Each structure stands twice: as structure tokens, then as C-alpha cells.
Image (tube, rainbow, N blue to C red; front, side, top):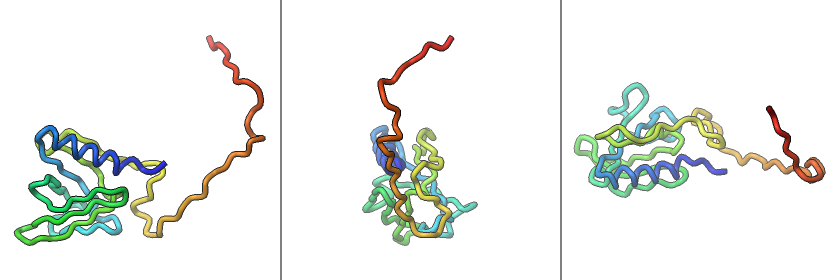
Length: 138
């Protein structure tokens, strides 16, 4: 299965906007590939306002989130690999989701390129034969 984080991010982004609140994204700025203004990074993290009024060209695809935004009046390109997103939430209520380590997602601290894992193929003869049976446990 592909990681669910980008799908959840897109859904939560829409949910926050539909409730007339401001979507904020918490990012681990130490992850390889993160491009954010370093002067706003605190304790290795940065909170980004990703509302339509704050950013231009927001794209959240299965690999990364990217957009243009102004920081202290200067337009900058922001690029955040999906594995670097720690949370997405509504500024006004704090409601949203914190992401943990997800099965199948690449290790965000591993600098080696992502390789395709071989698929495990079960042999037909390894499966039990006959009908399944249930027993009552008291």
C-alpha cells in the first residue's frame, strides 16, 4: 500500500477550509530535501500557514507539498517532502492530525535513495487446504 499521509493531508486541508479556519502545517525542517526559510525554524521545526490567502500555487501530491509564500515581504519557494510533515491542523481550534511513523513510508532520516522493496509472493502450496473452521472458546 502507498503511504496514506498525502491523502489525509489533502482531506484535512479541505476540511479545515470548509470550516472557515486557517490550515497550519508543522514541518520537521531537518529532513533531507526540506526547503523553508531557515530564519523561521525553531527547534528544528517550522509552522507554515498554507491558507489560500497566504500562499500561491499550493500543490500537495504524493511526494511533497510545495508553494510560494512571502516571508518578511520576500517571496520564497517552499518545498516540503511529505515525510517531513508532522501535523496539519486548524489554527483557531487546534483540531487536526499529528502524523506518526507510517508503515511503508520511507524513513525521513535515511539519506539513501528510496528503493522499491521486493513484493512477497506466497506459494499456493503453503496455504492450508480445506474449508476454514471455527471453534468456540469459553
